[in-house]
Amino acid sequence: MDKISIIVPCYNEEQVLLLFYNETEKAVRDIENAECEFIFIDDGSRDHTPDILESLAYKDKRCKYLSFSRNFGKEAAMYAGLQHADGDYCVFMDADLQHPPALLKEMYRVLKNEGYDCCAGFREDREGEGKVRNFLSRSFYKVINKLCDLNMSDGAGDFRMMNRAMADSILEFKEYNRYMKGIFSFIGFDTKWIPFHNVERAAGDSKWNFKSLFRYALDGIFSFSTAPVTLAGTTGSILLGIAVLLGIGAAVRALLFGAPISGIMMIVLLILVLNGIQLLFLSVLGQYVSKDYMETKRRPLYIVKREEGFSKSHN
Ligand code: UDP
Ligand code: MG
Image 1 (cartoon, rainbow, N blue to C red):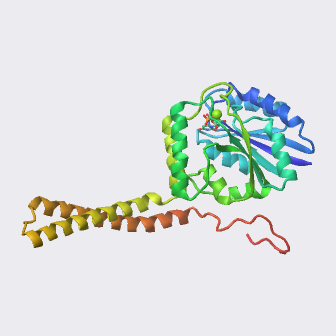
Image 2: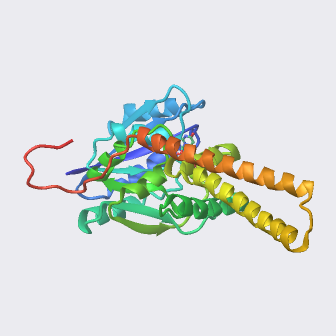
Image 3: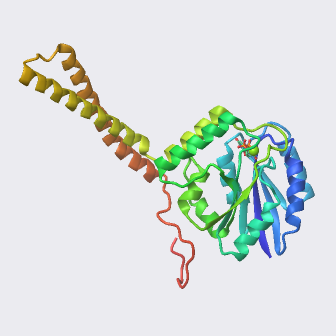
């Protein structure tokens, strides 16, 4: 009998929690040959979420929960959930029923029978979400994929079921500024995508506001890319390039036509050259700092999917 751990981060979800539990519990009932456990992470909720979780844990032994001392964010909640899950398969789900529980059965079947390590839900549309947020999200994924050499798509969320090997390798990423979507893409493994329709959250409001989404976006960029440092270097080079062109132009005019180089021109050239050099060296410095930054994350150098024939573990 396999065990599936359903990991659910919850922040002020009193309005949907019971609904979520009932629907999901019903959906997992007809998965054959697997039992489930629910791992709820109360991310410092200020409403009755902890009380509801307590009564669920009392009523149903498959329900476990832990409460954070304050709001640490969804990323931290997902990590904590994964640490506490011991299932053969783990799946992340939002508490607001935007991730259809009916897909769990299919995800399990794909992992079990088709040899994939991960089966991820792919949101086909963004119905039920604001136009502005929609547009900003799309643009964000375009930028981050270019900058970070990752392949993340707008529709790919955190709704995914994975096997033990993949769950364990995610736990190896102990970095503080976490960005799960980047980590999913970074670690590899074979993923099958199955589409689902986006629906509005069952009740309550989105826990993200513009500020938290913006911070999340920056976390994504800065934890997987040092491109902003390179940007300083590029800007410096462009300034120097302009200075050279202007300088050559002025020199040619002075030599051929005897036109004097004006004081303004000298000042402009000086500013361009000095600032260009400064930016270039800033970026050199930045390269060292960013190497060190990546180093301090202590990310695994490689991730093993399967091994056979070794007598002892090499960790
Ligand atoms: N969440 C969390 N901590 C936070 C924000 C959100 O645990 O600081 C949880 C929330 O309870 C929900 C999931 O993350 O289960 C997704 O949040 P939400 O539905 O608000 O995000 P959206 O669907 O709008 O992207
Ligand atoms: Mg939601």
